[in-house]
Length: 332
Image 1 (cartoon, rainbow, N blue to C red):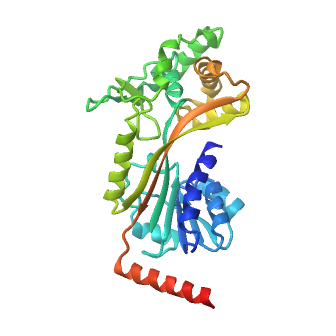
Image 2 (tube, one colour):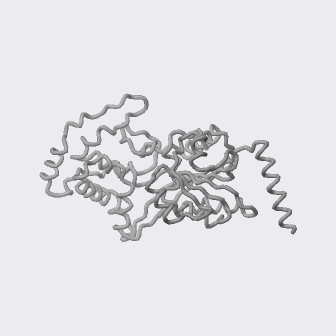
C-alpha cells in the first residue's frame, strides 16, 4: 500500500535524527489500524509509543494486532484540548519527545494544537478528480447535488433532491448497460494538477478541492504557517512525487472502493449499481489509458513537514539531565 511506502521516507528521517538516543515518548496522531505505528515501534522498541485515532474500530484492530508493553493504542480526537487528550492517552505535558502523523492532518481543519513533529500529508492524486466525476453522471447527479461546494464565497446552491431513490432505480432499469454513461473524454484534463479553480465541486471528506491544486510553493507555505501558528519551528517542508503500482485490476478496484467516500451517500440497495458505474467510468478514463496492464500505476504527491517545538526551561533542564546520564552510562 502506498501510505506504507511513503511512511518509510519519514521513518528513515526519524531514525537518522535519533540514531544516538531513542526518544522516550512518541505519539502517533491518527494511527488508524496501527500498522505504521508498529513500524515506528520496530525502530524504537525501547520508547513508549502511543497511537491514537478517533475510530474505535481501528483502535480495536490495532490493539488486537500490535499492542505490547511499550506500544499502546487509545481513542482520541486530534481537535480536542490538550487537557482532554493527555488524560485519554495517559501522558503528561512536556513529556512527548516526538509526534508523528501520516496521512491524517490534511483531513483536520483545526490545527492549532500539535517535542518534534514528523508529519506526512496527502497532497494530490491522479484518480481523485476522476472519482468525483461519476457523481455528475445520471442518474447519480441529483443524489449528489446536495454536496456541491460553491466557488469562492458564493452561497451553496443545494439541489432539491427531487429525484427519489425509486426514480433512480427506474433509470437504472431503463439503461441496458453501463456503456450508456455519458462521454467522459472532455473530463480527462481535470485529472491533472493545476491551479485553475472549477466552478463547483463535490464536498469530500477532506477540506481541499480535488480539482484545484495550488502551486507547490503555496502548499509548502501553507504548512509552514500552520506550524508557526501551532508554535512549532519549521525545519523542513517538502513535496514528493511518487507512483504506486497495483499488480492487477482487481487489486486496484479494491483500493477504489476504500477511497470512495461518496459511497456513504448512496442508499445501500443501490451500492452495487453505483460501483458498477464507478468502475466503468474509471476503466474508460484511467485504466484504459495505462500502458503497463495488467499492472496499474497511480501518480500522486505527498508532503512531509518536520518541525520542532521550542523547549521550555523545564524541558531543557530535563534534556540536559538525560544527555548527561547517557554520557555517564556510555563511559561506564
